[in-house]
Amino acid sequence: MNRPNKRRENTKSALKSVGEVFDENSEIVSKMSALDTAVKEFGKDFAGYEVEEATYNLEMDGKTSAKHETADTLINVLHPLSRGLRSYSRKAKKADIFELVDVPESDLEKKRDTELLAHAKSVLKKANENAADLVPYNVTPEELADVQAKIDAFENALKAQGGSMADKSSEFDALNNSLRKVEEDLDDIDDIMERVKDKSPKFYDAYASARHVKALGTRHNKPPKPPDQTEPPKKD
Image 1 (cartoon, rainbow, N blue to C red):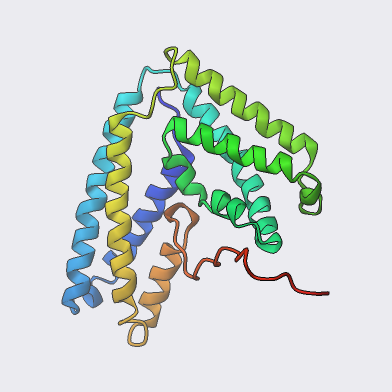
Image 2: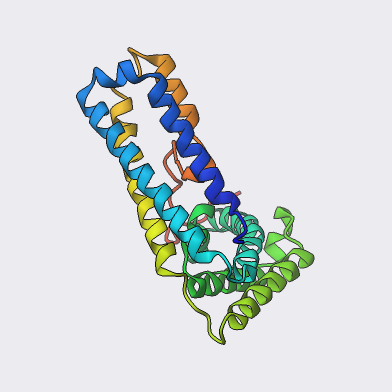
């Protein structure tokens, strides 16, 4: 049986919470036609996502889960290392590193197998090249060695799956495409909800609370701009 994926479980749980907020405030929703239409579209696309997830889970049943186990394990160590590099690169004004590691954790899972492996190797390479400067961020030689071990395990799992680093299935692509539709619906609803913020603050707060979850990749603040390499360093 395919091992449940925690990130997908969290995503679906969060989407259900958003849907419950709309159900509980259906009277308010129905009074604003634009919001009512957007919420119905969200409901339709979320139902489609659940169908695609069930299809994907069936497709994975009976297959080895080693690749997915090692991919999840790799992402779990790669993301914290990337965050340390991201903070360091911003302060050191190293735009190439910042651009490489400025990737949300949810997007790492969406990468194809070959892309994830190549990305992980690139991140580790930059970390090793700047290891001395990463000491203040508690990046240790042991952590770097652990990331290398996780990369090796993932690469070996890909090779063992059939002698090649096969990309994720078409079912996985369909699953991600359906999730993107739901995310686009929520982006639209975000804008519309600003129109009900003053008149229905409790509804707005409930929606914002359900919406503000890591699994949905929501960014309520503008992301920081990449460092400008042309800008002269500040003098102490």
